[in-house]
Length: 150
Image 1 (cartoon, rainbow, N blue to C red):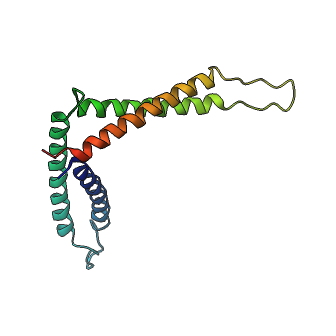
Image 2: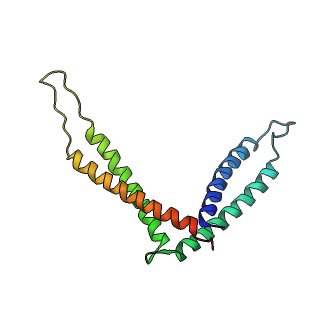
Image 3: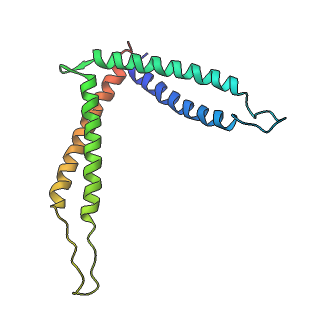
């Protein structure tokens, strides 16, 4: 199994676990004399199996990421860089959105609102970071599709 396949299965299991949690909540209580719509014990059994598989996939993915290198750098480092870039770009874009909102004045006596930063220069920085993220993500995806899961 390739790493990318394991990641896809893991994402699917995460969704299924969330759905099962919802189904479990809906079937936790019933009116006296009634039966739940679904057997809570069967749901709990399926939930347990999925959690075990989820744990296995996380463990194997982490082992694979630590043992996989690209240009002398472990995949775990590439993933950390990607996560940090995503956060940095998101924060910068949120800030730029606020900095770009200037209030229009109806009269000359109203307060003038101006950006506290050079929006254009910071937008270029955000664009460069986004380019770095795209290039890094392509390398990570390539590794995911060529690396066997440990």
